[in-house]
View (cartoon, rainbow, N blue to C red):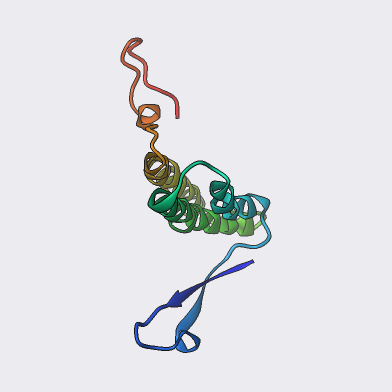
Length: 135
């Protein structure tokens, strides 16, 4: 499945807006399910501007976080069976981990907060036991 973006220009007819291919995310089930989240949100009790804001941040998780991570995963899959220098192979995994961390720590917190919840505690050290929280 290809994802396209449209460059909207005020005063220009929509049929003349520039459309570019943003990403090719294949036919992955996980991505399909993420694309359905705004539809699931429609069935919820969040209304009006809050719903629109929630849709925006959910799509941000996908477009700004998970799709770039998926691109890294595709590169890792493509490298299987090939001779790739160790440093390059490690970099692929580090880039994947960094993009996933951004998706869940930064973008997911923002999305959940826009729906009236707080999950920041998941990313803070535990206070009572002296241990750090597992993430």
